[in-house]
Amino acid sequence: MADEFEIDNQGDAGASNTFPMQCSALRKNGNVVIKGRPCKIVDMSTSKTGKHGHAKVHLVGIDIFTGKKLEELCPSTHNMEVPVVKTKQYNFSHIEDGFLVLHDVNTSEERSDIKVPEGELGNKIEAAEENGTPLIITIQSAMGEEAAIKADEASQKD
Image (cartoon, rainbow, N blue to C red):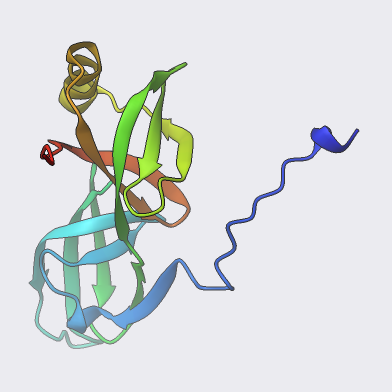
């Protein structure tokens, strides 16, 4: 009966996934939440103050997980949410049922909850598994989502 429940021991002590920042303080290559998605700002422009209001900031961002382009127009004095983006490196072990089996570089703790990415990165990881090439996988997390974003060959220690 006890094995029906899965306990998540990874608490975040109430830390928020985002923090507010004034539109005018955002910068290119920074991060911002557009339409509920964490994005990297690739372009931004400011229009002049109009007769009836504030200067407007036009933001163009790329979703950091899907790669989709999103746009937002907001008054420069308004606050926008900025996602807390974290990256962590793991040693790649193998692929099991479409998921990466990874070991924390520092603690060797195992995790297998990250899907094998699609496209070129996924192909690189699958090829490395077939060849027995050791990899370091970089996992990016933001707003409760996680994904593999990079795979580098691990340097061999003699």
